Amino acid sequence: MKRDRLPPLEWIRAFEAAARLGSFTAAAEDVGLTQAAVSQRIGQLEKQLGTPLFHRRARAISLTVEGEAWLPHVRLALEGLRDSTEAVFGSGHRRLTLSASQTIIDQWLLPRLGRLRSLTKAEISIQSMVVGAHDAPQDDVIRIRYGTGDWPHPYRARLYAEEICPVAAPSLAARAGHWTAWPRIACSGKRPGWHAWAAEFGIPTTPLPDLRFDTHLSALGAAKAGLGVFLASLPLCAEALSTGALVRLHPAALSYHESYWLLASPQAVSRDQWQAITTAIIDI
Image (tube, rainbow, N blue to C red; front, side, top):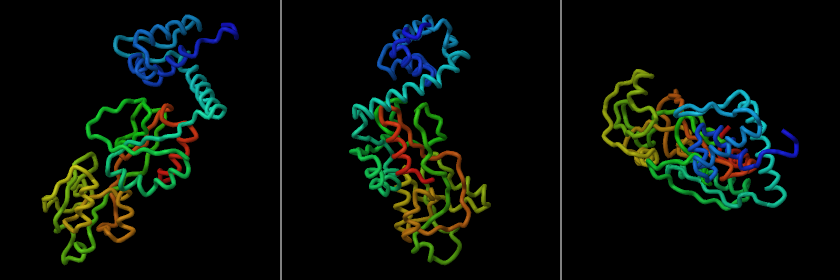
């Protein structure tokens, strides 16, 4: 291929999206085209380059050796083009939109919003996550989600290492007897519950919780009110522990492989903004 016959940028963008998302259909949604148009552009690109870039199967695609070798160079070139455009023409994002659960908004983002505004110099919009809502892999919203980090977003960073431990209000902690006999609070969700704690540390599985909540935030509120012992995320109740609103009832903690992750795409943030955001709200 001659130097003056570089492939059109729209062909290269279709290739990068398909390689990143592992699907022509998902790539079509990402670049705003039909699946047929993406397939056509990649076919034209392969013809110009003189080599296949994807292995095409009935329900899946995968990169060829040539495709894998070229992909890092494509990504670097696209990032350089995006960054230089922002630097020269001032096209950086002036508004950042974050979507998270109310628990994360109250217990994690609010104490860090001042630093986030200072470092990003952007207008910030916060949206409460709707439980069960579908997450598009690419859009202009920065998302905070709970899981293992296995998402297709180009920008991903874990907020903290998850640790679970029983906590209670000081008024309840002053009660006579061992805490394992006090009322317990349960919370639905992915975090380990009382049975996991009992299996790890050998405490009784009873008494059974007589208060159950669907959010960590509500369960923390009940614990602060002295209504029972809650198996809480230590990073999310760090402020309550430091102020004495809650006290820790066990010296050890139960580690968990899942946690909250910060997820974004180039449509939502520039690379410099991503660095500022992670500096502002991630505990290293």
